[in-house]
Length: 120
Image (tube, rainbow, N blue to C red; front, top):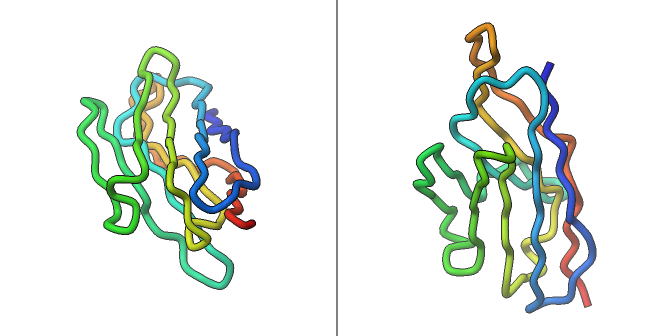
């Protein structure tokens, strides 16, 4: 019914920048909170940044001042701009969204993940 598809991951050097995107498609009536999570090898998935439908944002302390989350409601898309990247930012980045379908059912959805590797 709904798909979240991430793109933009890759290999970047420490101090570099990268932007990941996530597009939602399907029988979507409204998209509420959208967020980016990441999971490093051997660690639990953690919240990196969240943005409400009204574009209020919240960030994990480890990325404040370096990452920016934004969204385009017309395109059902959320972005994560990452700068001053560190090796500890390495992981699989997952998109998450709270979506209301046309039948007014509200569900949580996850993307398949995109790998971000920060290494020289």
